[in-house]
Length: 390
Image 1: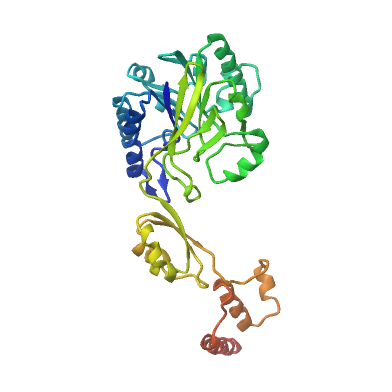
Image 2: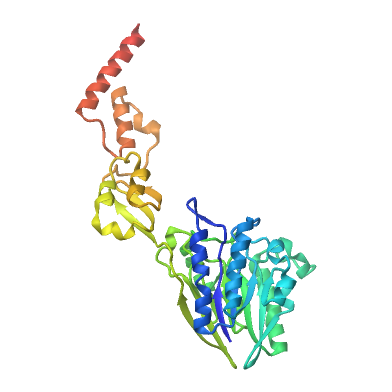
């Protein structure tokens, strides 16, 4: 059996105020060709299908179009809800959808009744574990105080392991969580600091990847970057770049192959990148004139400006060359060094002319008044003092 593992479509997400719908349509539209080329039997979508709990009507149409393409290419769909999804909305009419080969799993207890699909080697059980909010899933284990995502998910996977042993079939789990190898949990938290994760009263609710060790393959969703926690435990990441920090990370899906004995191989399949992300750096004049940046004129651009003085109307000027410039950072070169000081400490014991000069240097990255400005300031301050004396 061949399974295409994808996740975190985030239909409806914007990118710095710009709709990602056209790009996502193009990427999801590439799935049917991959399915046909590689003989994919099942497409597993590991949560965060939508970006909002109340998607607009056109987003349901976009989802229907994507699923239609997958089914027409010959693959079954197995999908779970993530923390961005409204489970009730996503799962509406799931019973009828299953009759058409689209299995949408949103109930917290659904893992107790795995979906069984077959291939030439026999049965494969799919255990759908949608995002589980402990406060909303108390009925799973009445009387037990499972307040953290990791403890609840560990309890669930313990039950899944028992089912796997009892049923004797090959097994695939879809889970939406923030899983890490315990030895590198701290590093993972720092590395993924700009991604979507769960926050609890105690901080980051990390799930030990070892809880998925008893299944043939765990298709994880929630993090937007590709990741391999173990040969059988992987994140596919999002199909689009949703942050400039992801600019260098590949976009695609895992092609997972099961043979009669379980996991046989896993390969990475690239997905198209409709509009690349790029970070450029320099003064505004350098960025507007450099011939080497012409290749980025169609990309999403994050520009870091190094001008000593903040350029006027910088975004408009940059967009004349880079129409998809989405973000500007300001990091002047040669600015004032040393620790930040309070305003009171900067002006203490100074005269008015010195205070104004200090202010200009502060807002102009160390560039104080020139001779003409000093002369003008002296005239203005003299008039102010003269007026006050009257």
